[in-house]
Image 1 (cartoon, rainbow, N blue to C red):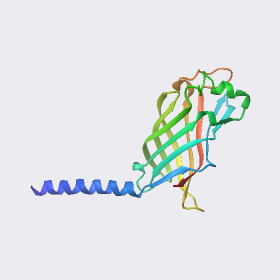
Image 2 (image 1 turned 90 degrees about the vertical axis):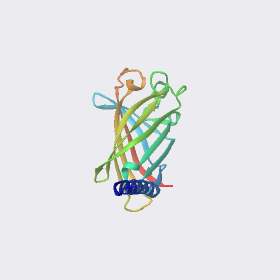
Image 3 (image 1 turned 180 degrees about the vertical axis):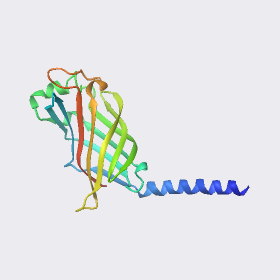
Image 4 (image 1 turned 135 degrees about the vertical axis):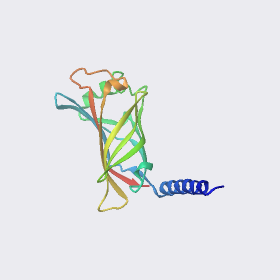
Amino acid sequence: MNIQTIIKNLLIAATVSLNILAQANAQEWILTPQTHVSFDIRSMGFSIVKGQFEQVQSSMSFDPAVPQNASAQFVLDINSLSLSRPSLREMILGEDLFYAEKYPTATFNSHEFIALGKNHYSIKGDLTLRGITQPVTLDTVLKPNIADPQLLDVESKTVVNRSDFGMKKSFGGIGEKVNIAVNGQWQTR
């Protein structure tokens, strides 16, 4: 073996070791029960309906020193949805929108965390609603909680079009764009 091959092999081994070490230092997190995973739909600038998922399964592997190795997953129970206008529940969970009878969960799986500086991240992943998967980007702030090092404060948001997921386009004053937000805290497991 020549010296260049030895150096190349040592660099590869060092890179693999650093990646393994970075993954080993990542902490596992879940959302606290007080965290809100919600959406609101607007029409002509006014909020028509707001919803919050009461049952959310979540996990995140995250080390702020190596955010590119992070990952996050959510599973939302559609039937746990509470609404600002309960009279719309049947319509929102019905076939034209969530179709909860056939699609009882929605999921998000990240595939890339991009550090933007000052605790700000762009989290790219796939959102699946009604059996249709579309790419989304969550504009996210993850900051260590000053009072408790076992917590990370989170503010995350994105906007999607309902029709991209097979939901009926704008009808009855309900707009096409849906604002999705996660506000609260991640806690270490």
